[in-house]
Length: 631
Picture 1: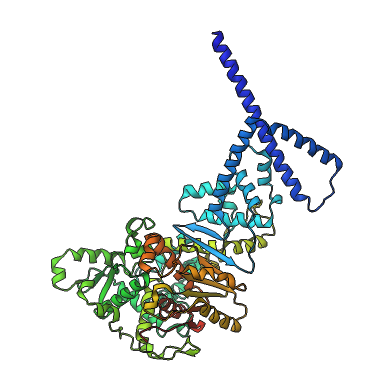
Picture 2 (picture 1 turned 45 degrees about the vertical axis):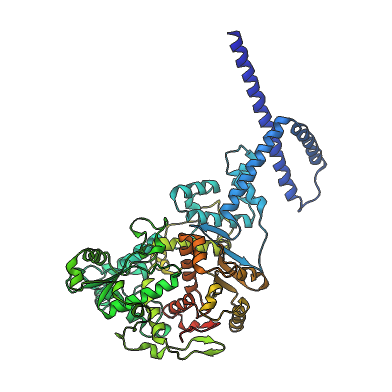
């Protein structure tokens, strides 16, 4: 019994000694942080009271004595290890100008306006979010007056990044680490409400009730759902009239003069063809086709192939139903959207037609009577270089000359019909982004432009954030009118796609300097232009950016090609998800630009130009370093 009591007394003694040692060590660390805080403020006033200096001298001596003990040294080593781990976590979460999502990260590089990373302030913020009992640091964390403007910018940028987390649990944990609540985060004008957009687009992609067309009216976005549009009998009549006459589809911006000839009518007619009122009507026939999946075929080639199949379907009066899409065969595409084009964009036809077509695939009679065909029913020439549909005449014969090569506008070439049709087909296939693609775009914009936007938002809040909750009830004009505005990007923005590498076997390859020569030419006409969205597979292009100090470059931060690695080998090294997501994000970002430079000998640039010409940007023009090899 006595032995047990002695053991308990010794254990209690050791526990008390350990607690005192740890407490003393943390007390020293708290004093170190106080000393750091005092020294950081000494720049404003170098004169300090003598008593304060004496106190600090005593404190320093006491700290020195205590730090010489082995237990305290061990505690300090453990603390510093924790600091290292915390700093690594912070770097991964909010590295300067870079944010990762789904295997991709994006960078914003301003050679002119670059600023150093404020590692000390970020370290303090992260350390304060841990369970360590640093009372002084916790006080500093919640005292908004102690935060510098740059720290607030980083905090808001990180908060937006947390909102874009792929899971609710990760989002909650990120907000806990930041010491914020979701309700305290102001809206980012560069971020789109993906769930709401998907709901609106779904409504615009199917026939309205008791109507033969979707609710395409002259009222944009959510405004068509305003109570006034349904309560007023006269408005209901005009709305019904617009729908029944088949107003032009909402995914086309601008007038006929702002796009390729007949673009709005062609897009409407393709949608009607692909969405028959009754998919089970015996007169409705189908063409079911997998996307091209041979090694070496990039996304651009796949899109060109499917454009050819859509043309065949229109000429044969069949509904095109796309099947297996190998690039969507990854974990990012969930449920039924896996291995399907519908992971990234709205499907080319209705679910009813898709289901019925797949039923017919198993029906021997359907094959015999020609109700169903597949890609194998057509030869390569028909798919890749087949005749362009003549349903609308020959509108390509009067394309506006807005492409310049070697200082001259291209007024005519031998493949103008193919150029016009592929632009129409790609615009239709990409008419609406899915919620998944919208999320990828949000991440890209936040990583590239997020800190710029944070500065603007904080300036509008007059230094009140985060101590005051900024989000207020949404007004009608916000909900029904302003919600239709596209996410913010720096404008004017120049899209530049630099294609080199193994493309030399198909086109004339020029150095990056030639692209920048065209950019300088463009800026002589538009001197306020200084932002470039750059897409390229070549690391040597990225290495040259530091030479151009008067431009601001934005680009995806992925591993790039070095030397003449083939595109197939390069994509394989990235993995399927990354090698699909990052090019599509770059493509869509390019289509949102105001000006365009590229190499039209590249299929990718060719398709970007097609999106320009069906996106209301004909008069933006296109500067090319070469021409397509078939012209």
